[in-house]
Amino acid sequence: MSYNRINERGIRRLQRMKKILLIATGGTIASKYTEYGLKPQISAEELLKYVPDAAGFCEIDAVEPFSLDSTNVCAAHWVELAKLIEQKYEYYDGFVVCHGTDTMAYTAAALSYLIQNNRKPIVVTGAQKPIDLAITDARMNLMDSLRFAAHPRAHGTVIVFGGRVIAGTRAKKEFSKRYNAFSSINYPDIAVIHDDRIVFYIDDKDQATTPLRFYHAMNNKIFLLKLIPSIDAGVLEGLMQYYDGLIIESFGVGGLPDYGDHEFMAMLEKWTKAGKLVVMSTQVTNDGSDMCVYEVGKEIKTHFPILESYDMTLEATVTKMMWVFAQTLDFEECKKLFYTTINRDILF
Ligand SMILES: NC(=O)C[C@H](N)C(=O)O
Image (cartoon, rainbow, N blue to C red; front, side):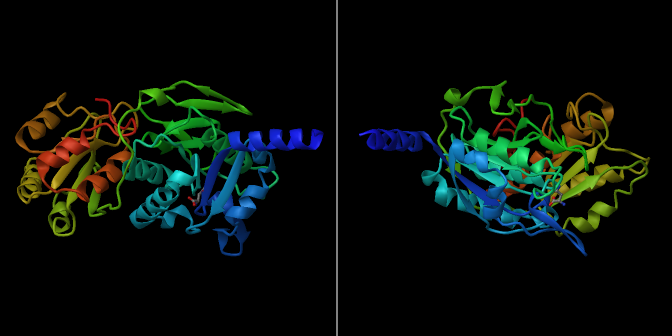
């Protein structure tokens, strides 16, 4: 009798437990020191051995589609991850993607565009130190991520790092070495995690009504030009044949230099006439662009069919353009898609 009762209780507990899929992709979190430098070598199953307490609140399966330093992660990997999550979506309550930190903000933004309106949480995480070291941020980040992915109020695509939960389109790696590497740009943190407590600053799961949708393609023919004083606009001439779109990271709230030769204007004319999309953004991290403030921006904005990134991060701007271009190159359609808010990316 008592055995049966324990058994039933155990079964009920298991039924309440969330099922999480851990997707390991490499990064420092899974790296070991080698004579060639740090290299991902710790498998998905091994990662889980460092967070045994997670078994107290969730059931975890683990897969490892690839194992790379995130420097080597590109658009094809984002599509692969989105397809994997699509295949497994109905079987799990949440997903935790272990990833290198260097391009993590791009991957989280890309997944936000490839998988839209997901009520289930997709958590991207990693670490600044390998998980097998005595002193590391890896165990806390992984544990926090699993805890968040198992929380009934969690949804959407986020980064969990350094005790913070950041919208997948708002994250930026701001420190190359310290533990608290990521910030949420122009948007508040969604939640903070202290040990086993999650405090939500934004708790809006019930407000989501749009249906889940997966996409399967990115167009990576996008070039990013960062302005420096004295830059020669002629560089844009040769690039036109290779790219469908151009992001210009300008100064301040946005504008283009004119060093007396009107060269940038001439280039913009060429790019836009050729049906290419030009998006103006800013190299200043916070507050975003507003091209119409100064003459150097307003003139361009009024004369050419161009877009601007407003409060979006560069990572979101890049990956959103890749997602938009995979669907259309028509300017009006691009404009509509680009200015549609997806996973909290743009609020202008
Ligand atoms: N902390 C890290 O994960 C950095 C590593 N190079 C990566 O992005 O894969």
